Image (cartoon, rainbow over all chains, first blue to last red):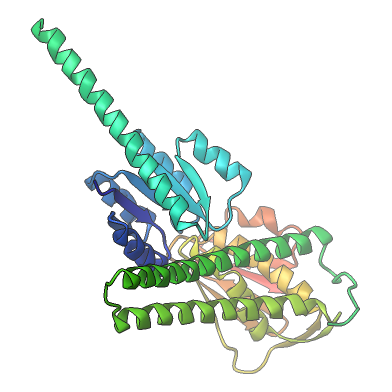
Length: 142
Length: 206
């Protein structure tokens, strides 16, 4: 099953090459060159992971992460940054980010993180389905 | 580089250090972005080579595009490093004639990323005649940087700030509000004019 991911980064050249490399790894890639565009795309689709740049104009990655998590707490977010401080890392983890990777990132490490995000999402979906079934069974008295 | 590393006159140590730290952080961040794009393009070439070994055809146009991307980023990195070198060597001479237009262009380039983060465009007006002052270039940069940082905070997102070199002064136009400016200006030889209508911040360098 191919992973559905969204890249949010203000570096358009970075988005272009990452999109091509991830597509070659059988992933379905969407891209957004601004925080605003990223939030719109994230709200419209269902993604296994969002890969988010930390330093962007308008809104930084931490603010975007906060909004994404408020709207969808199950959404997995991986932060990418040119320079990660310990403070950024702690804040990102507190807000529920899956990880914070430093640029230039190792593609294999990023791919693994995305696959881990998808696996985590599948567990959540299965758990929710199970709960739903149990609820229906209890309602029907089965 | 000369051995003369005496502290720049008229710039308090903390201001100078803050300027160096902010510029270095901004430029190194920019370099990391450049390296990330080059790194991914190298990775893309590896992907294409791997696919070719498995029998997939290599499209020459795809290779050309990747090479062009890398060349573009190398050019970008070269430009960043040239600016950094100019900035770093400004400490070499204690005092010298400084062209304020050149100074504005250098500081605007150094502050480009900081401004872009707030979607602010920086422009430098070319004076009709050269505006020269005999000062320590590093000291002037640190002072102008401090003013520009204040102006960026006091400008609306999406606006344009214009640096106007004048005789022994640099004016920053395009500021929208003066709140927040006053507090940071106490240590600066600067004044605000046009309060209420179109405030301007002028750094006096006489």
